[in-house]
Image (tube, helix red, strand yellow):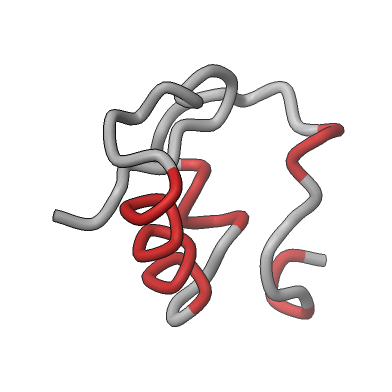
Length: 56
């Protein structure tokens, strides 16, 4: 199914490696999410489970 999908639903994924974030949020979605994170969580307080690093 992977070639026919775009992203994934993280709530049911057990693979918590940071690399999975790029699978869940393909570009340009990941870039936008990182920009929002930079504004709302610049100190990366919410980094458990599937961490999305804020844009620098």
